[in-house]
Image (tube, rainbow, N blue to C red; front, top):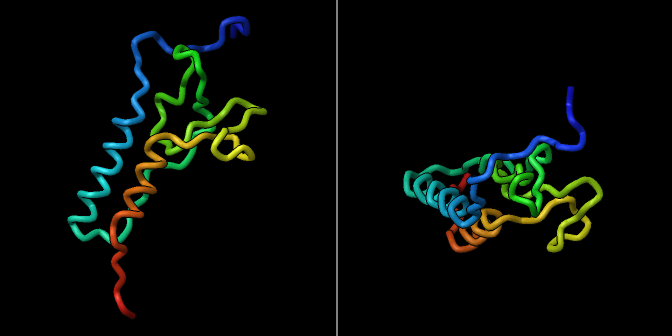
Length: 108
């Protein structure tokens, strides 16, 4: 039986570290770029089942590799007010990485 007064929550001690996630993603993009890989899939854009919450005990987004943090139902982000998510540091880091690296193209 589920106790609706006390929804599932995280144990204390987990830390949100968006900067580390951003570093790991861009570091891997750099490794792939150096190896000559033409394209890569950056894990996932959004994980709507792992919602962000200001209270760290309910911030399930900490377990997500997504580039954006999903909002609670009915909530929207501030960067894109019509979207139910807010960009994380990794979203901005991936955009900056691609903006600062020359796109390789092969003539057909």
